[in-house]
Length: 445
Image (cartoon, rainbow, N blue to C red):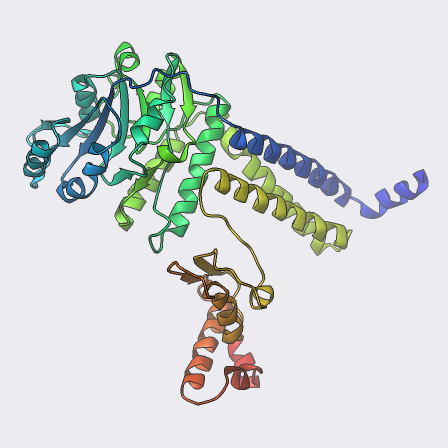
């Protein structure tokens, strides 16, 4: 037996070290996946927070009169006995003041204050938040943005339930609505950010927050003098408070569905600003936090690179393919576990051939074609699995095409075949069951 391993070792040469690294990386990734799954799916302990404690909700607004009309009522109509909503007008020059005055007549618990447009500040975000905090009548402060709305009329009640006497900060989940068209990628990115924030907090790395859904205590803010060290910078109005206040009490992440916030803004500019803000803040993280957040991604990427290298070298081909599929399956299953636990949409991955074979997938309302096929009927057949009897939702279909690649050629070919089919009365398969010589040559032009 020893001679067999000696011979195998010599045959593999330098590749044996890559094989060993693959084993180490796979075990590390597996342990991390189990650790994450246990943390995310663990049940939250029963709350010992004082019920009915007063809440102040603080929102800043800069020339957002239309958003005030559309979203503010969702905060004002919360089912909670003792709360106020404070809107700080950041130098608005539109009809924000008129909108707020009209709403105050209907909602007496709406309070407003203002920074006038003539104010000479480089950035007024932190100053506006500070004004709102100083005006607040209650110790527990909740924060959001005016382009957002609570997913439930019990948002305040459920966020307050996390504020035990020793709690300093509570961080919530905010994402785009799943019913809105074209939000899939944005929702996915924001979901992964929330997971990363949750895991960092559990690892006691207090570097990340989300100003669209968070809260902390006024007394702790005052004791740390708030933003006094850097009030002129927009960056860090949420993350800084998580870091500063973590030394005074617990930092918790709210996972209850009724604590979620919906981002009611699908403008590209808003998404671009949101992404830029996140990555600018991320560059300021200490090395320890950055490594904790990204080490598993780095290890997983290296694992795939090494596995495909060994596959290219034809070393233990069957075992390497099995390992690649197993790693992918583990990632796929765990992501769906996270999605289910946080009441998000689940992901179902299926081949084009299997998807077009008599399945009924009315539980889905989004189809993404990742790998195009020259036979358009095969794609349509797979898409139609979601358009079966019993489907009650609007179904969105996406095709991911790489520009200037053979995929783009295939897409053009599909269009030509579709035009031909539409111009003649016959069954689709009669005309597109074969590729002509010209079709094949066009793919490689």
